[in-house]
Amino acid sequence: MPKNKGKGGKNRKRGKNEADDEKRELVFKEDGQEYAQVLRMLGNGRCEAMCIDGTKRLCHIRGKMHKKVWIAAGDIILVGLRDYQDDKADVILKYMPDEARLLKAYGELPDNTRLNEGIGGGLDEEDDADGTDYIDFEDEDIDKI
Image (tube, one colour):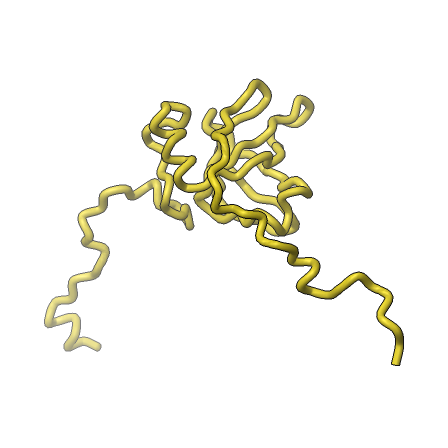
């Protein structure tokens, strides 16, 4: 049998739990940075996000966060804007749900931002529908079938 020359297997690559439970200091945006909400994940370390300034940008997840910090649709992130490409940005930080609520309470995020709901396919267009998304069939319609 061949000798194992590596330093370990799958469990080593996973690493230890990085103590995500402990509280970290809330990071606010600086110049050249913007808050954004993830619209959808595109794969290959990229996502599409709607920035607070109203621009939809293609965001690249930096290597330090790749495979360590999981980003999903609806998450609030901090992106670094590029000087030379306005339609692209780099994900710097993902805010935990309680941090996102604090940002909204401090007035950093606008009031119309929906925090704890995924944005899967245009939930913003129909905020408060009256629940009549069904079709009424008459008795005559059933007889024709």
